[in-house]
Image 1 (cartoon, rainbow, N blue to C red):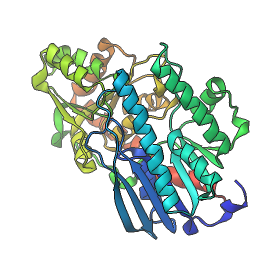
Image 2 (image 1 turned 180 degrees about the horizontal axis):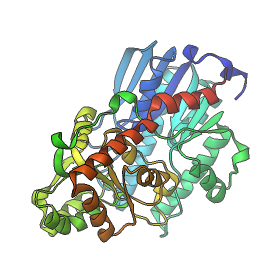
Image 3 (image 1 turned 45 degrees about the vertical axis):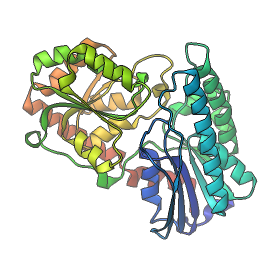
Length: 401
């Protein structure tokens, strides 16, 4: 960073832009709002978050001074020509909302763009003098889709935008160093061409909680996340008949919306296990989400292990959230967190097969003692993902005294 980074953080005016109701936007907001002079947050409602409300929120020395609602574009199904067009329009609307709020409430010392579509607007705002510095929080990187079509075009557009953001930012925060390697290999931009700091996904300390085996839903499996095919919930549904045979009181709670929701509901109906599965849909109240998952016996993160799944270059928040809530996780191998979960005894890492999922869940749920030990280990591991440490360290490297 240049000499401007020597301004004490408590004197900075900072603008954050990202999706609402994700671990990235709210966690950084919670951390910074009492630590900077002025904080603005452009929170955008995701295209698949039906019922979510976008907002612009501004704090001065930790006190909320303004909050206005921002309209969004809901996309019920992106797997169609009409849905693809709607998705493009939704991102265009995001760009306009970010630019409008960033320009209207200028000047800013620092703009933090969470993902490249936010940071790309930050590049424009910086060139126009609305912000002095730009931080690009790079939270994912997309491998090349196996099939030609709209998805591959979107990936090319993403890589183009990502290169612009990385080269024009004062600092790039990487959610995992895997992105550095992917950007060099797939995007043609080597790590020595820009300044970067690793800032893994984290959660605030106050979110953490845990319940003993005796006060939870003993035979309930939980899932929270966007309902897309790559999230792999269909594997759990395929395993339901065998799991129900082993655990007659089995129940599954699925929280979230997404373009694959109808297909998942149809699969549950076809499996004959509809009485066991509760689709909660999108829940706006964070405390309700946390309470539901924390009372589950175990939770799952069964991403498909396909070569075009962007989880390969991500630091997924789902298993970290489970750990912070003291809930052991069954996760498919691939991301670094899977190795941590298995190595710490906080769950099981599997390949994407029904048999391995059933075996892993059976090994955790069959015995109270084993389950309680896994819950204790999960909660202990969750302390590694606390934002009070992770964000503090990243900021110290970004704004050295």
